[in-house]
Length: 198
Length: 203
Image: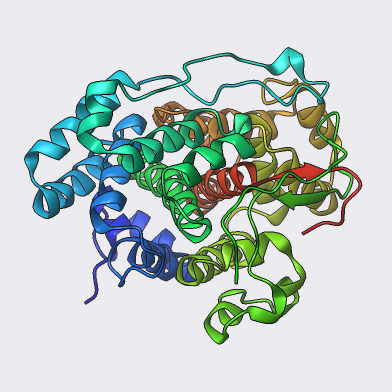
């Protein structure tokens, strides 16, 4: 039987009550897994390295506080690139912790009452030196997407382009952070539902 | 050949959350329509999307685009039991309102109004946000969506029991979790790769 990562991370046994709820949406189940495979196990199609993908995933899932998902990506990062880089990513996530979503709406919108300022995260210079410009820019962009997506801008994409990210790679990076935002919530939500089922 | 530079489209920014059909303009070059590969065309799933700048931009990475779209379709369109379509759309609209995606909220609030028997809460949600005074069922849905959309995630057992108390069965709760989680995906793509345009055509 093929692996289903959401079942595994949410602790859902085949045929269990919550597992059977997922079975009623078979294409959502198989394509959630296909999404993971496209981003993390298929041959890279756009030139975003496995180390970059796993480092961003470890950072993003640490920010969400869903332990089983973070442990999964962190273990893969350690296997691929060693414990040292995983330690740097985790320390960076601690420095980057916040409560989202927040941010200001465009000045052109009449939504000032809903503006909520918060941390604009920059990787510290010593860590940036260790991670390199390209991964540093990716983590800062991931933080924007996780916590204050409403503050996205062309300038944020310029910062990625300046550090060597191509258009196609920015699409991959955006999908990566956005998919993880989905995956952590499905795993967490189904895990909670499982705990409330007798 | 796609060039790697930022686009700065001239748009008419929507001044507030709306159910009206609005457009969206990309900040990066989509794959030109006449340069779509067979794999990229297949990844669009719905071939009408070859006209969409949004989907042709995502077509730069076709494998994840295809899996994303098929996930989306089953979460929202699968009619086999569970949460009624109007409530799935309401959850999508509430997630988009909370994250701040005016484009996503426009599409899915309109769908919610179309499918709900009583769409009163939809405009209230757009006008006042997820804390608005809503009917009990939509209040419970908005609370669950808000907790699930927060980072770190704050969804807990209390949300399950409130959803059950307003009549949601477990299939419906699983659908709600998926609908809101999926819009945490969709909002981040729409928000980070371009911007809404009040005078444009829906993508």
